[in-house]
Image (tube, rainbow, N blue to C red; front, side, top):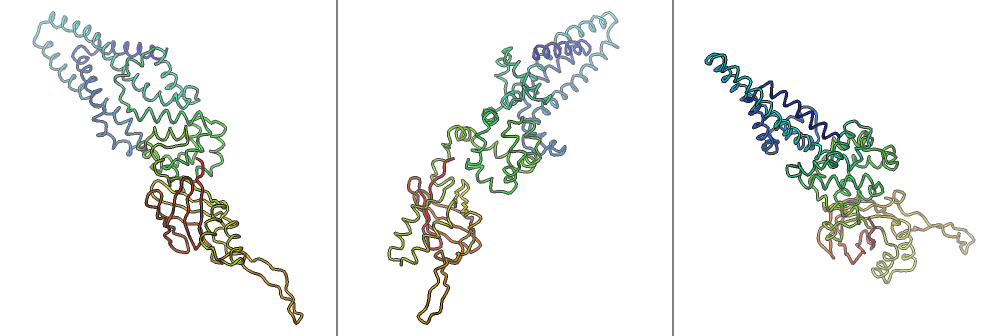
Length: 427
């Protein structure tokens, strides 16, 4: 009923306005509306500067708001021309024609104006239906028709009514929104109705690289936000969260989302595999593989003394347990050792007391690990292609460039005199 009520109100209002203004102004308005509808998208960028001035920092605001401003700006130009022409014609009939001719002219102008006004109402309704079609589509995806927000609820219910009355088929040929917009809306709907998939977002190569920035780390640390997500909080509640508002308004997140391959991202959410990024085998997270690391180090140092091998093995088992190597799509890399082992020197292994021939008892100790210099977590860059890569790690101990080898789902490289192996972690 919303769309029918809107249609009746718009047509009734424009018929009344057309009757009052007359045929000339109503006709110019009709022509202006048609021209404005054609030029709204091309002229939209000319009005993008308005939104930063009034406090809208999001790139979405000028993208959707500027064409609306352009539409009304062009139509106002034609209204101004209409007022000028109407005044000239009215002046002629008032001062240069007899009263009978002027009376007939005035009646004719009002009646024709009412008829043309109905056409204006039709154009206004199509514009209104287009706005509902574009914004209502996203609103439905994020549950807006059941929202407590008056605006979202109205848009959602209007979009449902637009489809129910089959008016969506009427406005579909004029819909200016690009395909990418609807793909993005579908992806938002997928995440909104399947909250368990949100944990997978951070593993998508583009977002995985962004997650290293402090401002994005606050999203995962915000307990209130995580509770909202897990308890299926509404879209407006999530967007009202201070952390989300800060990220959306003060970062390039929206711009990045608009520019990325949304269909590839959606495929990743559904299957865990990105067709776009899966071609680069190194991308993703790699967890430390103890058994393979021990095998590689045995091959690296086959003649090492038993006592030395004992310390090497202890270090491989204890220090690197749960360490993770991550390769990002922007060719950055990160090697993370667990916090309790990061930069930690070798602990001492207490040996049993030894009694010397002279009767003296000596308490001895030896390094439990192979070395006392502590390997630290590091960030850096990677380059190359499968199966051979160059990985540069910059830690507090300095920079080191190592050669990495990729074989199926196994990655290995040597650092600080030890060979480390990793297995790909599932997304």
